[in-house]
Amino acid sequence: MALINHKPTTPGRRGKVSVVTPELHKGAPHAALLEKQGKTGGRNNAGRITTRHRGGGHKQHYR
Image 1 (tube, rainbow, N blue to C red):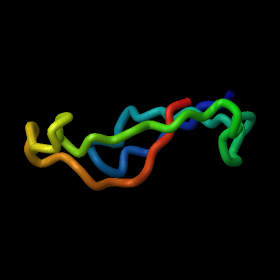
Image 2: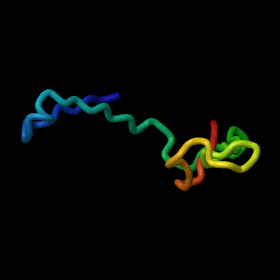
Image 3: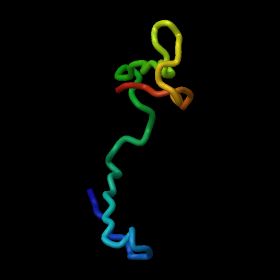
């Protein structure tokens, strides 16, 4: 595990240190460890919107 010190090109980058982890797996997750993560879209069991501004988005898994 290596560390990268960034040059202070902006005030927010000053003092930034990044971690390099090439040993971590880059491929797709192991399918046997995945579970479906359901979405409600802000609706209750009657189908009515109970929480506004929810819904859409990319499909996700729980691992």
